[in-house]
Image 1 (cartoon, rainbow, N blue to C red):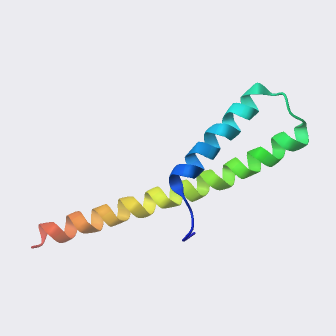
Image 2 (tube, one colour; image 1 turned 90 degrees about the vertical axis):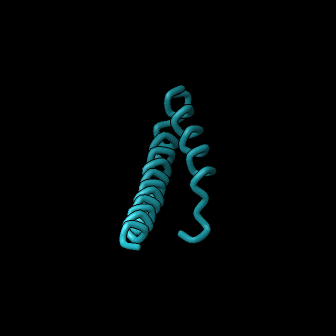
Length: 65
């Protein structure tokens, strides 16, 4: 996940959501987009969790000084 781009992933999620909301694509394509979106959500969530952990660690470290 080193090359994962959070901001571009959010943009892609917005594109996927818009496409799915229109409903003008085949069921097969909808399924593909749903799977792609689900994977992006998992990765974005992991990035946010890691960022939160780092912030917590930094905050904890600064309180101990």
